[in-house]
Length: 340
Image (cartoon, rainbow, N blue to C red):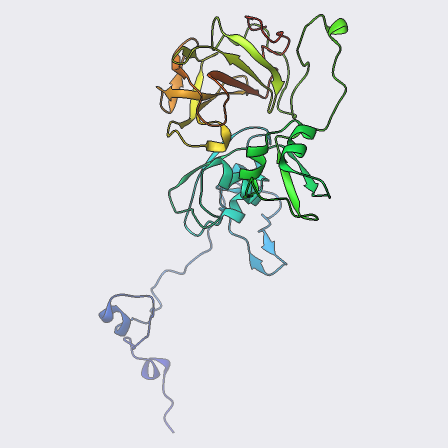
């Protein structure tokens, strides 16, 4: 019996099915490699001392976890700003508000409230969201609680509590329900005027948003303005002045947020956030209008004008410092004060 050679059994040209090819001819005319075809070899790292193999992240030791997450690579996520800083996020395909909230450690309501969204589904690819870390107190409603009584007890604002929790200000609170007292602070002993030498002031950081003292770093955002409220909210002071008075950047920096739409914007109204090279952020809110856009600004540059947009009673500047001590922290209410 004749013995058939491999050459007789396998012709040089063989039909093949390749589902990933868009070329029909290539799919039916694949050629069997001959003995002269170079042998493929594995790629070799140029560094023979690479060390331990890279461990790929998995979910439950089975499915691989994507290297690139909502906010970029794991390295990007590890370098996100401290929890008191304000961030900006561009919505990507398939993002949900819940995913974004979890990534930044805030609630879904915080993002809805700060961006004037209609609901948790009101986000679309390409939207620019402000991630505004919000401090507050969780409270289970007890008998006798009202928005007004809770606001008074925790130093908050009744209208803000209602808006943040999607409540009807005219309706009674539901006993046993849980609400967030937005901007609420637990009562702490206030420094006496005799010991501080001030007629009305609060010392120290507010709601954990302060930081180290930066002597002579910050300028005056509103020269000639009157301190109308000491430290409150997120390390902020209020400075009163006539509507339309110029507001100045207190230090060189980069504008990262501009909101000039006359909307609520988490109570800030029209506002600007600037980041500085000392790792702090300054926020200027309730403006009549903003005249800068994203990009670099210089110390002393006009960035907008005093107004009363958002949650404001009368024309004034709400001036926050995140990541450093507020330079007006020791200024008495009612005084025209210079930054320290």
